[in-house]
Every structure is written in structure tokens, then in C-alpha cells.
Length: 210
Image (cartoon, rainbow, N blue to C red):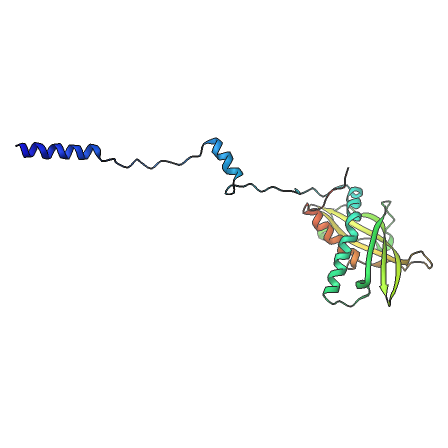
């Protein structure tokens, strides 16, 4: 009998001294710690130094920003052509400045711009006239050129698009009349405008300072 009472006492003592594991609880961070965690390495929120900007819908504002950047865009294309070993006259060019914009449209006449069926509901293209001053290196000599450009821009649901561009090429100072207008959408300036408009639609263009 005594032995049985001792065994019962030992068994009860074992039960009360043994700690059952606590149920699994959801882990939550206090509000103050959450803030610290967000500022820490694990939950860092990226800081956007240059947030995207909307491409201007106003053609004059658009042109002002485009002409500011056009020399650097065009010179990048020229430099890329040099790296590729392209042999053409424009690989010896350097675009100095673009400016003197005008917006009064000219009559398109018999050779007017005819949009495709898919673009038939679009507004007539905006006409922009501007000038570029360029420098050409050839045979150890330097010549400066003043070229005149007639740009057509269309505004679509995606934003501004280049429709076409015509260019006249002349010397600076002008000693002879410039050439007749030539379609130049695939030339240096045409390519530069197309790439710039793509970047503008993507919100990657720095706006003009106020």
C-alpha cells in the first residue's frame, strides 16, 4: 500500500512539473518595429530619384524640350555609327545646336501627308520648323553647316509620333542656296527625334526648368 502511494505521488509530481508546448501563435511585429523594419535592409522601399514625367501634350513645349536634347541624341547616333564602322558622310558630323522653332503651318499642296486607313481618324500632323548648326570634318578641314528641317508630328493615344521630316542642307555662313528638301526620316536627325519621342512617351525626359 505504501509503495502504491509513493508511485502515485511521483507520477503526479511528473505531470505538474512537465511543461506542455504552447500552441503555435501568429508572429506580428509591433507598429514601432514595423517602421524600423521598413527602414532596414530587408524591407527597404526604393527611392526614385527621377520620377517619370509626363510627355508634354502641347507641341510648343514638346519642341522646346526636344530641341534642347536633340544634339546629344543625334551625336550619340553618330558615335554609334563610328563604332560600327559605318562609312558615310555623317560619321564625320557633330551637331552643335538645334533651335529657332516656328509653328505656322505651310499648305501641304499636292504632296500632302496622307495617313493610312488605320490613322485616317487622326488629326492633321503638327508642323514644326527648326534649324540645326552642325560641324563636319573632312580631309583635315572643318566646315560648318546650317540645315533646315520641316517636321511633321502626329498625336496618337500612345503619345507623340514622328510622321515624317524633310531637310534642306546648306553652308554656314550661307554662301549658296540650300539644297532642295529631302525626306530625312531615316537620317541622323530623324532617328534622333524618333528615339527622343520614345523616351518622352516613357516619361524619361527631364522637363524644362521653370
